[in-house]
Length: 196
Image (cartoon, rainbow, N blue to C red; front, side, top):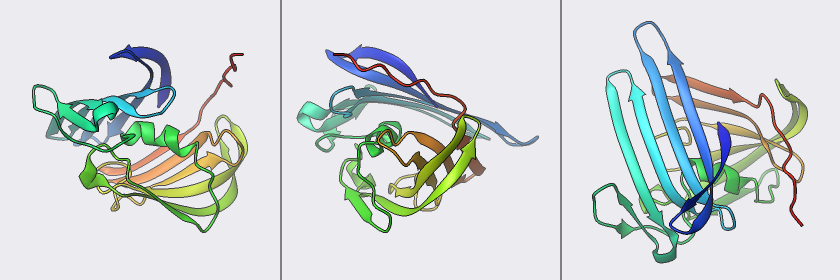
């Protein structure tokens, strides 16, 4: 998972986040990639592209998302209703960093860009100290749920460890998927520079 920089999407300055999964066994290979472009000011999703290769299952999805009119469209298809301030699977992780999180609380958001995926539910489970390749951190652990297939599906029982400080930087993610389990660990980070 990488925040790769900024692009311009339909006049909006957008972060480009890249999420890649690669692995498998001798008889079952997985190679999934997701790219999300989301507005640097509002974090609203603007474009979301998935290439899924899981065993014999292959899918390519390309969504243009229009927050200003609360619609989205797949490539070469008409626009359909979305939500205000939409989020996709990847931009959601960056939005989550802006939410004040209290252990024992549950938060609900109707912001998933495909309305049938709502509400997004966040259970704040606990605090703990974790060690990942990037170092040792105090963390707050959350369980996100989106009513769609993927790493945050209700069946996946995903847990996300965020730094228990003002950055809420993602430290670790664990999720059960149809082909096995997914474990991500922060390997390195560079603090951003605030502009004046």
